[in-house]
Length: 167
Image 1 (cartoon, rainbow, N blue to C red):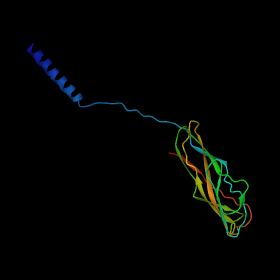
Image 2 (cartoon, helix red, strand yellow; image 1 turned 45 degrees about the vertical axis):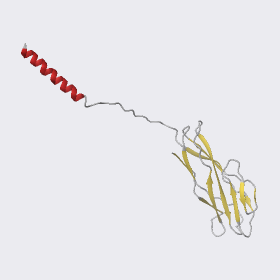
Image 3 (cartoon, helix red, strand yellow; image 1 turned 135 degrees about the vertical axis):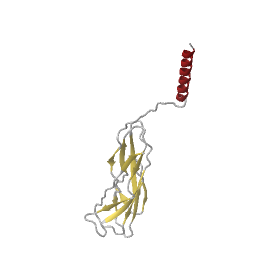
Image 4 (tube, rainbow, N blue to C red; image 1 turned 90 degrees about the horizontal axis):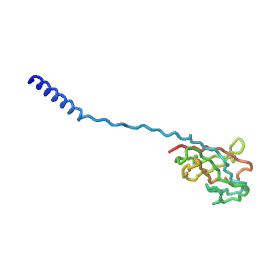
């Protein structure tokens, strides 16, 4: 009987020792997740139009605000006709924030270019508030067009790129 008790005692000590080693280790579960959102996109809904401008000997500027209802904020030349800020519609995942950018300037050219055949406009845009519950927001681009002294008559145009990205 003593032999069996010694055996059981030794087995109990080994079991306790193995249990003690297990007390030095632990496990936990982690979670992996992902959120899929609609791709962000931008489309041009309205072009930037500085209107009709009279040629003057000293040149000048025409400035348009970057808001939905365009306001001519400064003009040192005679301007009239359709004057509108550009409107871009940004779409994507609801409630997401994003960045919007346009270049600082755009060149407007008449014909093949050359002396008196270009003008430059500095651009400004409204600040994105974020894509609301509908996943859409309108951003406006205005700017200041610099008209040269005795600017040549004609229709001037230029293009610029609007870029959007999720934050």
